Image 1 (cartoon, rainbow, N blue to C red):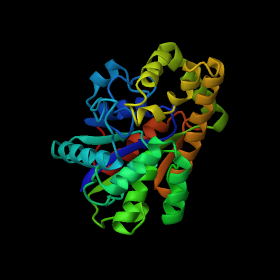
Image 2: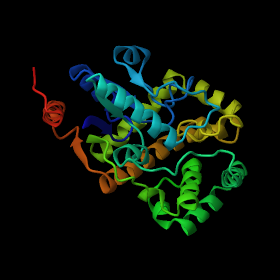
Image 3: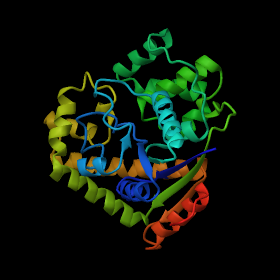
Image 4: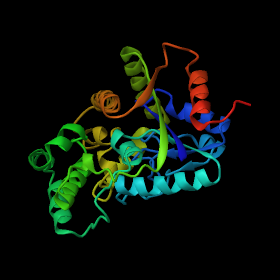
Length: 308
């Protein structure tokens, strides 16, 4: 059975650094689980690893699409499974780093996402028209009515996930959260990093400040100027909050405060999802300075190997 390690947790908690260390120790390669790091030219707001880090260890599902392309959980699942199978055949350890609970669940639970997605279907067209008209609330009401289970669990502020969930319930008659195909295809060890809330929020706030120093405004302006052609990127945290500033409707400080607030809220939602929906081995990075060594020992046991 293929062995896969996944590292989850809120932004700025140290997932990427841990992933790089584990990849080097265990002859592994990194698979990004992030739905935005796939896009070329969007580096700062998506918190990609640096060019040196990307070169130090092979990374997959990073910089594979242009910002005007759509990318679904089904696309992620198919690509990630292929990479995992290829790495396993090469006796390398696949390390899925970052990403949302639903993305990771599509892998660990081998979700059946309703067959080939038809972007020209009438249902998709109708739902896309609502999204383009800014009718997110109507999409939320449709999902709440047709699939209340998914409405309670998925990120209902994400229009594309609303659309996909509605498509699945209408196509299969089952909630997208129940689309298991019953076939276990890999063993997963899920490592979760977290921190005490005040420290975590401080980390998130400092991460946003660092992004600004690194050129976030220029990158967000690029997305703002192309928002009609960037259907997913324009909704990314770190970009959309700056649109009022570029439109001269808000101050920069107010917009940065909004980025920090939304980042903190997203971190809280993700922690709740992983804690309640998935079997994650959590480590509070402030509680034990030796947590990385403990994780390494557990991975050795998980993969059935021996420490050299």
